[in-house]
Structure formats: C-alpha cells, structure tokens
Image (tube, rainbow over all chains, first blue to last red; front, side, top):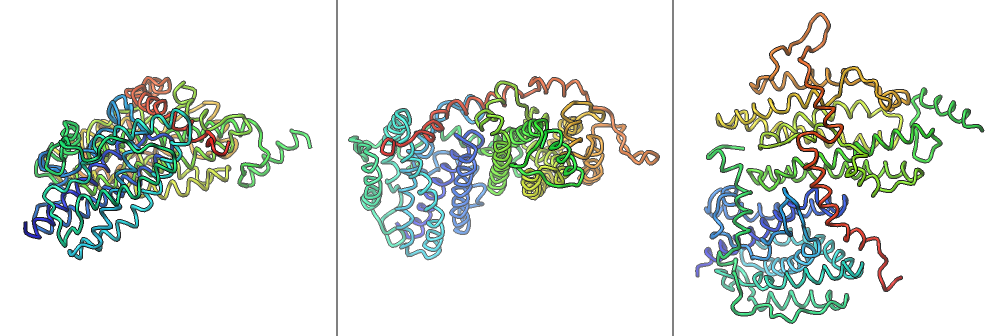
Length: 261
Length: 311
C-alpha cells in the first residue's frame, strides 16, 4: 500500500476515535456525578473533539473533503473508530432517562487513554513530520486525561464495595470490545506508523497491568484478541448505536443542505 | 454587645457601602435571604446548562460544537463558584451542599423562570446565548455592587465570561440571519418563542415580595425589575432590529414623553405556574437532573468513604 493511503487510513482512525469518544463524553454534560467533575469532564470532551478537528483538517489538506463534512456527513460504514468508543454511556440517552454508568465510563476512559498514549508515542516516531509534531503536542494534553482517569480508577477501586463492584463490571464490559482498539485495518506497519498490533498491545498491557495489580483488580481471563474479534470498527463494522449517534450529530446540519451555520 | 447594637453597626456598614464577608457577624435575616438567593442563582446556572447541553451532540459544525461545549462548561463553572460561597454562608445554618442541591427536587429551591422553557431548535441555542445571557448580564451587572463581598467578587468573573457567551450566541444568530430562508425563519420563530420569556425574565414591575424588600434593604440589590427590563430593551432591541428581525409585539415602541420603552404585558400567569414548577419543561428538566443525580449517588458515596487501607 502506498504511503499516502496508509496516512489517510491512519488519520481516519485517529479522527474517528477522538470524535466519537469526545461525543460520548459530551453526553455527560450536566449529568456528571458532581459539579466539579462536570467541569473537568467537559474539558476532556473539548480536548478530544479538538484533537479530532486537528486530524480532520489534515485529511482536508490531503484532499479528502471539508473537515465538517467528514465529521458530520460520512456514513457509519466509512467510520474507522474502534467499537469500544461508540458504546453508549449506559441505558437511556442524554435527553431521556439517562441511566449512565460511571463505572463503565471510567473503565473505558482508562483503557482508551492508555491505548491512545501508546499510539501517540508511536506517532511521534512517524516519518510524516506534521503528524509527529501534532502527536507530541497532543501527548501533553493526554497526560492530564490519564492522570484524571487513573485517579478515578483508584478511587472507585478503593471507595466502597459498590463502587468496586461497579468498576469491575465496567471492566468486564469494556473487555468484550477492547481488542478492537488494536486492530489496524488498512494501516500497514511502515515508517508512517512504525508499530504492529502486538507492539501496541504490549505497550498497553505494560502500563495497565501494574495499575490493576496495585488495586488488586484481577486481570480478566478473557482473551483480548480472540478470534473472531466481533465487530471491527477499523474495517467499518459498527453497532446500531453509532448510527444513532451519527444521526444526532448530523441532524441540524442536514436540515438545511448547503447552509452555513 | 447586644444583638440590637450589632444590628445597628451592621446597618451602618451597609449604609457606608462596606462589603460583608462570610465570617462577619450578620443578622439571620441577611444570611437566610442571601443563602436562598445564591442557592437559586447557582441552581439556575446548573439548570440553565441543560437546554444548551442538549444541543451539544447536534451542533452543526465542529467550531460550534467546541464553543457550545465551552459555554456549557462555563455555566456549570458559575454554578460551582456560586454554590461554594452559598455553602460557606449556609454552614452555620446546618446546611450542606447536598441540601442545597437536592432542595431542587423537593421544590423547596427554585431555578430561574427562563430555564423552564423549551429550546426545540438550533436557533434557540442562539437565542439563549445572545438574549437570555444578555438579560442575565443586565441583571447580574446590577449586583456587582452587592453588599456581600464574596458574591460581588464571583460575579465579576461570571459577568466577564457571560460577555463571551453573548458573542457566541450573537454569532450563532448572525449566521442564521445571513443564511438560507429556512434559517432566517428558524431564527424569527426562535425570537417569537423567546420574546415573552425575556419579558417574564425580569419579573413583574411592581414587586412586593418579602425577599425583594429584604434584598433592597440590605443593599444586596439596588435596581428594580422594571429598571432592568428597560435597560435590556435599550441595549438589545436595536440589535434585534438590525438583524432584520421583527418583535412579536406590534405595540412595542419608544415613548418619547415618558422616556421609556412601551411594550405589551406578557402573560404573568405563566410566571405563577413556573414558580410552582408547572412551566412547560419544569418537570422534564428537574427529572433529568434528579435521575442523573440519583444514578450517581454511589459515586459520591465512594468519594466520601475512607479507603480501607487508611481506615
């Protein structure tokens, strides 16, 4: 595969992961466990959407189309985010009866942030200089996200019997999708992305295992990359929930085609 | 010193324009009224975030999504700042943050009438940011000189940030005004929907409520509802007209003789319904907040519990 194709495929994975998790985070606005967390989580959601914008603009510069159109109008089958990030925050929606699950949210954020950190480190070594520079900048912000979510993880693990139980349930639920973060779809290991799926996994496990161990949380026995993997978001396979998310995301901009907002 | 002497010294400070601080002696009437007022302000910021946060997932461009998220976050931030100073003042009354927050669910605490209204289109996001926040700044700027020091200081930041919100809202409205015919119509419909709410916002001209009298007595508040409403008209009506919008009030005009804006009275019975949490979306918004609060009770309990290793 030509380098240009690898770069484009990679940018879609990066943009879509960040946009979709940022969207899920933003659904917590006004509904987070306490006021201070609402503000902190709102910052994180803004950062994630901000990163998505950076990657979408890079795609725009590569001739893939307008960044807003790429964000709002691409059908689900063209999305390359991992399935993990598109899962709803819990039962209900942000508009009706939000039975959102903070245990799942924290478990997902922690495994995703660690994955994202490992991936960004790889990107700082990319032969594509603009991407390497952007990755270095984003890593500085992601450090704080990780710190925030590790703190929550410890707090829920140590807090009460119920918080520990809910965290463990969240981890079990996350585990069914987590392998999907590491598949590379159309991204070939190359100077643009100098890592394999196994490299990403090893880096991620190297960081997550000590965090689990410190809290006495058992490492789940379920295999991470069990075949068949289930839905592979990197190949455009998604849940109906992503369809619903995209429908909401595009509702206003589709209402008056061709309009400026 | 007797309480009567303390009170007379306190009133002298108020008359002089001194700022009262959290640890100063104050009459119970001052404390209780202020806690109520600030609790309602904090809850209004938090409840006021809901109609806008509902539109974050649907914001039509990446830039709008980012700015709306930042705005909602600011509103929650104002809620947090004001709740903190309300907590300090409420502590001697034996009240905690949890009390101040959950009184919303029981109806003991209210939130601002304007946030009981529906926001069914993207134009409502513009209307809230531009005109509702515009009205809020008019009424909050009048409190910058409040006798309670912590509140006056927090308001400086709140008003400065609201200035950005107004620009954000005006920019959303401007894009619609300059857009396609459907967008212009959406904007006009939004104004038609919000106009009455903007009049109700400031409350009735003649207000005789006990708390309003107390707030004036202690120089917590110095302007009347009608003075603030007129100020809002002066600042925003010319701008509304300049966008080519029509006010949904054929009798609205400047009365040269009285040097006042003349307007048709809104339906004040709507305000009475809202006070009883019977506004259009009162129950929906309280329900959303209560559901999420109850859903995350276990998280707050986990935060307050001591880790086993330390206990």
